[in-house]
Length: 322
Image (cartoon, rainbow, N blue to C red; front, side, top):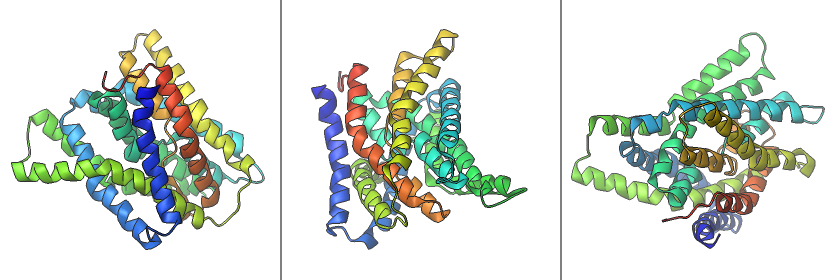
């Protein structure tokens, strides 16, 4: 437990530091979008490129990992929508609730945290998860959300629009560039590699700090006050049902003879136990959903995940550096 805490405490402390810095206006609100842009367009792509270039292609695009994760994500989306849809939660809000229930913070938090806990080999399955969520989970949920406002081809058009937005995201391209370098055995020229390394090294602390700042900003701009009954159950789905389902489906796949190692199953389960992706609050705001509810789900899952994630990692017998 102490070894796991030695890793998780600094990660979640940086998230808290970002939240408090924004709340106390030490970090101006106007600086938060710039901080987020730096992580999204510079630091995180550099980190993913470095992990991708040092990881075999099959580990980056492992079909068994992708299938297990996507099946579980679809089930979580379905369960969350069915469970929450009602008089107080329309289809758009239920869809975004499902997205935060199924989409963990693998980019800003998951890749560096899981690599710190389990070693660099954890980057391969985690990057597969990022790709699955960017292209499948988010596209499905945003299409469902748009179906609330549109008829006919509205949902299909929304899905295509979301897919185009995903292709404009620098993260898949950074992963793809890393994969090309991995397959071809390329390496960057010395000065360029040094710049990429400097950017990559800044990704973890700045990303974690940014998560906290973004969470504060999302709560500040929430347009509604949300009772706990409308957001705590979804946070519970994210932190308890999601990892349990991933572990059960992965174990069933292993029992059926699928080539899924115990290490990969551990990475998948711990990734599912991560808190909700903080950028979903920005999507909810952009699409006119109840961003107050979404922000509170993300905040509740992030605060609680420090305990639940640490306990689960200890239960799996994770020994950082071992």
